[in-house]
Image 1 (cartoon, helix red, strand yellow):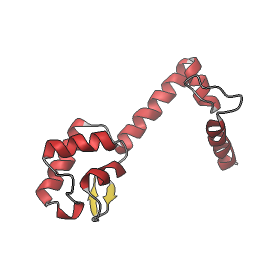
Image 2 (tube, rainbow, N blue to C red):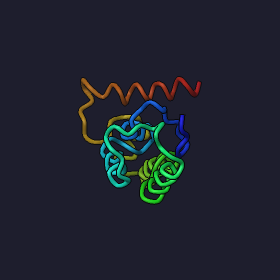
Image 3 (spheres, rainbow, N blue to C red):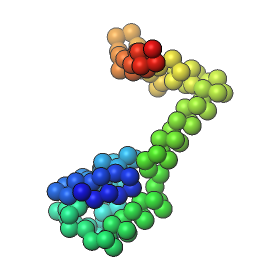
Image 4 (spheres, rainbow, N blue to C red):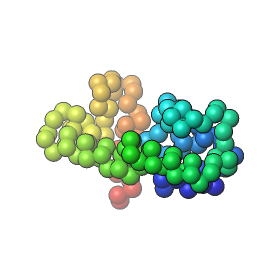
Length: 122
């Protein structure tokens, strides 16, 4: 296993798919990073050299917001919406869908998450 940016990446995975295990990097972004570094489609994690690992982590940290920083940014955005008292902040606070979805027959996922939080705090 290779430890890159607070994430363990499995040796037998291809680089393009293994980068998706890092929080904040999806399929499209991982393809862009691999194209920038010149990694082929079939290149695996175990074949990376130390220099390539350093290049990879350097490019990701300089250009993208990932991991704990991204989580903190999302949390701060939600807290800002709650603190200014806007409608979206209210919906976040109540654990309901935020982007205009109907809740009559749907919205179960958001309500289920709210119940998990309430049960966890008891």
